[in-house]
Image (cartoon, rainbow, N blue to C red; front, side):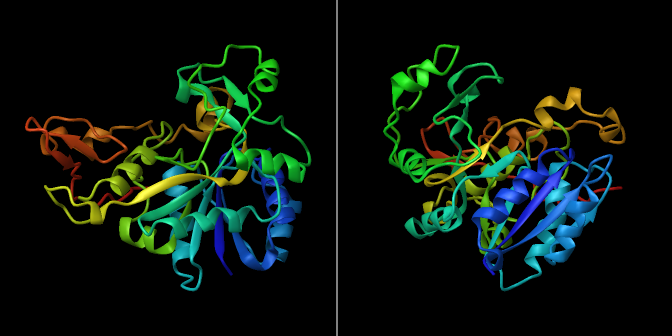
Length: 320
């Protein structure tokens, strides 16, 4: 078996499609699924039976937040010592073609410093290009079934600017990469596939973060800093780690269907915990030249010397 796929969910209307497309395009002997169900109503009995029939894992808990739920799944997966990859899957994803997984993990071979790889999505969140959070560019339109030509087009990265612009009712910034190559460092963590060794080295997610995100920025800072897990004041590139998105593999992602639309979901999901997102308390400016943390893991001092961001050494224990 190659991987565990962990789905931490707070709503139940996407998980069936995510799992059915995973099953359609991924050899069943290659993976196991862990569903951490934090929803109010719970998944369907049909899906529950399907998971049990396939000897997958289903865990039902009160909503504890993205980080806590995924840590429960990762702790379980890490105990299975023969499994080399552990993936954290948003439920608003759809798998598109056979071979996507081998395409994704191929990227690990290009650099031993890579500890996590994410596929790319044909639906691009345009907040990265300065547009409103509800703006998206679709390199190819959403389909029930994609052709070999679609996948080849996505991988090659020579996109039809005229055709794409014609399908959108807003102006696409000039910075959008209609010609795209290679990998992107500093991923959005909607589907990171971790090497087992990377998780063991860097640890699980920070569970303080709840409802408002932040655990992804904190984890990226850990990876790109060379001062975690061992504290260092000097930058040493041999300790740098990378988390990258690869054009070799493609997965459809709807984007923002839980946290980003929290106000439309059942408020009972969130009533027992207060939102929290305070990166400064974990990566304090007083340890880092007065600088606020950065996902690239480094800051520059007044002499122009590159310094790694340093983290507080305390271990957080959640009180339930």
